[in-house]
Image (tube, rainbow, N blue to C red; front, side, top):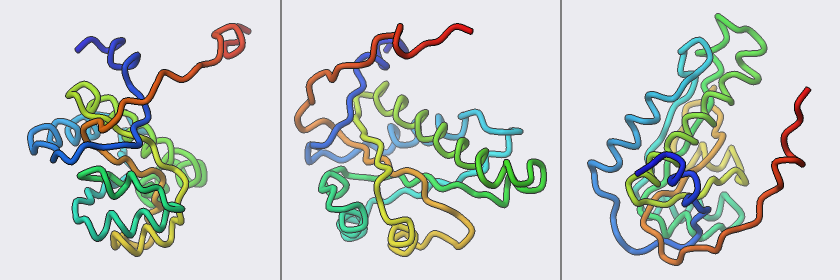
Length: 171
């Protein structure tokens, strides 16, 4: 699939089919995550794969009842790992770079999923402490984004975007 077509076709999926994600597709997504650029190539993030239905149902509660987290056959949780960035980048590494690293990795996962005919939606609204407890995330790591992955149940319509002239500023 052409990269620009992937970007054009990607939608925020909130309805998933009851179809498992094949192991080889997940593996390709995880390999793409591992190739994501990061500050100083430190990869100051960790990723948790959540498959168990009971954990996904708990994630629904932790996210203000976003039901699609339980519908999708798996959820990736991207966590910032400040300690990995601290030595080289000090405060900026712990407060910004590790978060950027986790979000870039999540974006790579979204695009890798779409390239294989899967859909996702970025979830940023959740109780970090509750998510950490549900998935047993070690202290020191901070959940930044959750990414349910699966096959589309109902394709959402195209949403309007800002005009480039409103978004881009040449200086």
